[in-house]
Length: 444
Image (tube, rainbow, N blue to C red):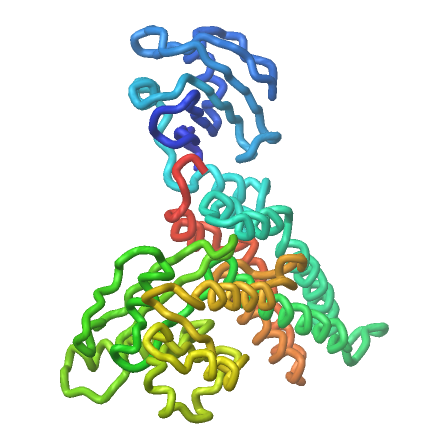
C-alpha cells in the first residue's frame, strides 16, 4: 500500500487518446521527472505538457496532465493522470518508460479502488457498483448500479449499524455498571431491532429480484424429446447453437445463451428431453435438465401439439411453469385449440416463427412485473457477498431478540455489526478485498 502505482485506464487499441493513472506518495516526484520540471502543475486543472522518458530524456508525447494532490483524489493519495495520443505503439512506449522508473510499479486489478476504500473515499458497496457499471450490458443494469454507486445500500447499512451500536452501548453499560444507581435493570431494544429486521428483510427481497436485472432472467426450455426445444431455442437466439435431429435424446447437456430482450438480459437454457432411458450419458443430461428447471425463473414446457390429447390439468400454466405447444404449422386444428385453450397455453412454430414474438413479449412483461419496484426502489443488495452478510446480520438480530441473557445479547449485536461492516469493507479489509478486486479491471 506504500508503493506508487500506475496503469492505463482506457482500453488497448486504436483510439484518439489513452489515459494513464498514477497514485502513491512518490507521485509528485515522478510527475516532475516526466515533465522534466521542478514546478508541479496547478491542482485539478488540465494542462498541456511535454512528457519525457526519465531514463533516456526522449520526448514521448505532448499530453494533457491533471495533478490531484491528496486527499481530494479518487484514492485519497497524491494522484495524477496523463492523457496521451491513442494507439498500441504509444501505449507500449509509455508503459516501457514508466516501468523503468524506480519506486513505480504496474497496479494490480482493482488496486486504485482498493486504496480508495482503505483511505475512506468510497466504501466496498460503491466500489463493487463501479465495477458493475463498467460491466453493464443493458441500460437497466447501468441505471441500477448508478443508484448503488450513489450511496445506495450504504445509506441503510450505516443507519442500522449506528442504531445497533447505540443499543449495544446501553446494554454494555448496564452490564459494566449494574451495581451503580441510575442504570436501568432491563434494556428494551426490541422495537428498534425489529424495525431493522423488517428493513433488512425488504432489502433481501428486493435484491433477489434485482438479480433478474443484473444477472439475467433464466428461462429453461424443458419437455419430452423431439418436442422442438432445440429448434425453438435456435430460433429465439437467432443462431444454430443446439444440434437438431429426428433422433430422440440428441441434447445431452445444457446449452446456454444470453440475449438482450428489450433492454433486459435473458438467459435461455436448452435442456435434455426428459424420458425413461437406460443410456448413462442421456441420464446425466436429464439430471442436469431437472436441476436447470429448479433454478430457472421461468420454465417453458415445450410439447408437440400433435400430442395435445395427452395433456391434462397438471400441465396448466402457473407463475413459473408455462406450457408451449410447438409445431402448430403441422396441424389443422390450431384455431380451434387456441379458442378452446386461450390464455392457458402458448402456441408457436419453431419452424415458421409463428407465435414466438408473442411468447417473448410475455416473458418481457413478466420481467417488468417482477422488477418494476426494484427499478424505482432505493435499497437492494447487488451481489452474493452482500446477500450472505445481510442474512448473517438478520440471523444475529433475530437471535438477539429472543435471548434473555444480556451478555449473549451483546455478543449477537456485535456479530450483526461486524456483518454490516463487512459489507461496507470497514473490517477484514485485506482478507476480503484481495479476492473481490481480482475480478476488477486494471486501472480501477
